[in-house]
Image (cartoon, rainbow, N blue to C red):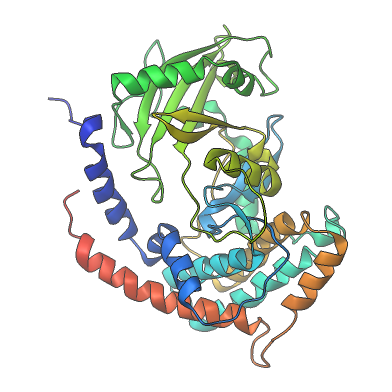
Length: 401
């Protein structure tokens, strides 16, 4: 007898259980899946943070939201890869969020506290380097550590078959139901098919360099996609398209990620206008912070909700820091800080970059070369998340799988 998957009408309860279980797997997983708590702490805290020039920020700048991303021509760069929380806001929020994520990753690797302190120093060193010269100059770029180089090599070698492994099967490719892909309703399929038949989706699907801009697009299959932590409970679909008539899956098959766009938890800068539509906001943020990704995205609507679409490419990978030694931890902290710094810096005018760099250089304690607002924020947030994580485990870790 085949395995049963929840019907669309009973999906939400099962997704809530899965989300709680995923967040109970590790303290770092809990941090990744709990953006709201991060901003609740910031709002409740009496700590005074510096206010940098308002720019598009990631809003959820943890380690796994950074990684190699390919553009439509196949060029690969390490950029921010998840922009659900993006707003025009205070760049200090991205620095703190990344610092907390790195600190929790260090704890997961059983590294001593002194290494965490050194990681915060290297995070700010890499970030400030992005402001040391004109944006785009090699002088602003941190040397890529071996850990990241290995991920980049893997990304460059990946082909469609790697993306489709265990997902596409049969003479007529489809998305087989599994723990990651659940059935959708007839009405969901109808709406997805209508969306995929639009000209804007056809242009997106034919944008890759190996495809013909005149090719037609056909939806082959679709499924509800059980993925991530923060997106569990939102609308999320995987859609398989055929592009043109080629038999080569590298050019003819296309996997589209359709994800519900909701209001960001990150506070936005006062007096700054942004798109009211959440999908348009996310795409606008991506174009500023991760252009390789932003140029591959579209806004749409499903079941009356704003959604954004992007084609998944084999080269898109995330940075996972499961096992780090002392040296690797500090190198990665500097590099990821630099990636975020460059994403912020190119949005600022020269005078704003200078003022922000000067602001970052203030309040350095004698015992650690990290701004006191960053160090104390990370320490307080780690303590808050550790306690909340243990309570979360007590409540949810024994849920049925």
